[in-house]
Structure formats: C-alpha cells, structure tokens
Image (cartoon, rainbow, N blue to C red):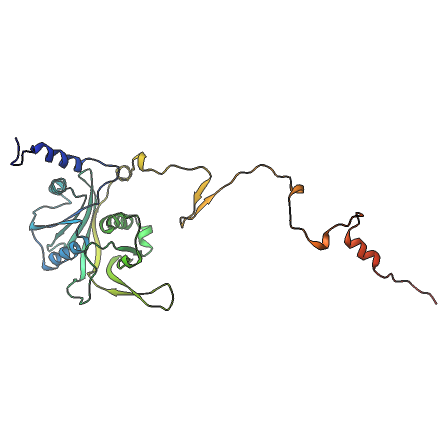
Length: 307
C-alpha cells in the first residue's frame, strides 16, 4: 500500500512508533485537561485558565467525559495512551463535592497518583486587567509553608505540582526570561495558588529592582481525596537509567550551592627546607653572629655604684 507520492505508509508508522518508544531523555511532559459529565462555570473557566498556563504542552478536551477517576481510571489511561500524555487535570462539579479539580500523573500509561482539590475562591485571568506573560513562558515555582515538608500528602502534592507546571528542561535561562512566578502557600489546611509577573525596574546599579504584579489566575484550594502510589512503585517511577547518572569523579565534591571542591594529595614535605620569606632583621652575619646578638652587645651596660 502506497500513498499518492509513492512513499509507503510504513515509513509514517515507523516514525510514529519511534516517537512513542522509550528514550534516555524523555520528551516534555504533556498534560491532558478534561471535564466530567457535570461541571460548573467556575470549573470550566478554571480549566481554560490552567490550559493557558500550560500551553503549548497541554491538550484541552472540550467534550464532556462521563467518568469518575477515583472509581475507574481506565478512561483516563486510554486517553493518555492516545494523546501520549503523562499528566492530567480533571474537572467536575456535584452537590457533595462542588467545584472539583483532580490533578494526577501516570507512569507507563497507568495512574500513579492523583489528588483532589476543591475550589473555594477563584479569580480568573480575564478579571485581572493587566498585561500577561507570553505563551510558553517557563514559570518559577515557589512553595511556602512548613506543611509542604512535613505532611506526606502535601509532599506528594508539591511533587505533583512541580511535575505539572515545571515545563521543559533548559540548559540556561536569561534574566529577562524570568518573568512568571507561580506561588503556592500551605496554611491552615488550605493551599493558596497565586500567579505573578516579575517586573525588572531600574535600581541605579547593575542588579535590577524586582516588583511583582499579580496577573491571575488565583485559587484558594482545600484538599479532599487522595490516591497515592506505594513507596515501591513511586521509587520505580523515579528510577533513572544508568546512562543518565553522572559518573563520580575521585576527590571532587559539591556543596549545597553547586560550588565545586577538589582534594589534592601531596607527598610528605620537609618543612625545614621550605623556602619562606626572608626578613632583613633576622639575617645572619658572616661571622655567624645573629644581628640581634650584636645589638645586645652594643647596648650600654648598667653599673651599680655603692657609696
């Protein structure tokens, strides 16, 4: 079977299978954003705003999907395999759980973990009349609150949000590109999400003065249900291939800030032969008498006189 230009369809299928095959350096994680059978205007607008933050690494499904992820996740796994997405955001609304968002991720096209958040307060992108960041801007993620380091559920939520919003991995970032900030705060059992634009102002010196301007969207979340992977499966999902692991170099270490330290091994030195700085006052004379002894000899002696 061939196409009109004479090239076989097998070439296209081969390229498609190669793009889906496992790689040492995986592609950028893509998120699928969908809504359930019942949704509210708040949930629909929230999904659109989060999609605008994730573009172009996101797929927005406009049709309703009658599924319940916590009861049956086969539908999500089917769509993830079809669109090659490893992240998902599902929005729903009912009387028991109003204005509901489910953040989740998949491993090998099976649900790894998902966390359900309820929207208590929401301000959309269109309600805040300010200039926005360009599409595809890589955001800086800030997490505030001790609970992100103490509570097990919030630890997983922090890891999930990092995966969801981090964007592509880049070797370097220019200063002007650091203009979008996503701030998450855990306080009193709630999670506050804010989006800011970083403005670089003149400061009279080389380092600019930084001001933050809220651009939206703004969320006040409360955590509801969770479905977390076991520790063994979570560890398996984070395993890296040996080819990507950096090779250890002997006698080289790094501190917490990335500063490189090297240890040098030397043979035992004879310190008596060590060349030091010569001082004129300590130099010996030709006769072998030290200059300090000459000064002591030339000094006047005191004589005791008895009457």
